[in-house]
Image 1 (cartoon, one colour):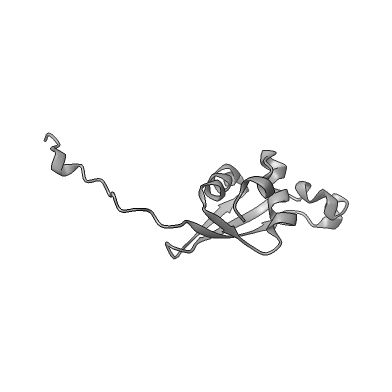
Image 2: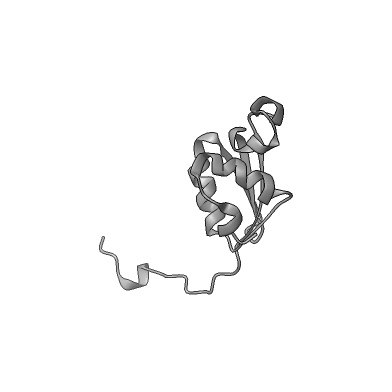
Length: 105
């Protein structure tokens, strides 16, 4: 069956803001890695993002760090507690990105 232009519907509505709440839990403690200055070595047990406008959560295990990073980079605003000094640095241990400078937080 051939597709016609009527079958190809494009949603042209303007997309609203993409605000996410972000938190992560680590595999290791500060004591395990030699102090808080080494939080980039703690590893990610689980990252969680709440997409506020969509009213949904997304969970990222360590194996999906690249997807977590992409989700944060696609957001218009990232909100969290102590994410600049902690969560972003833990995530950067995997990617080398400077999230504190590049993400709208």
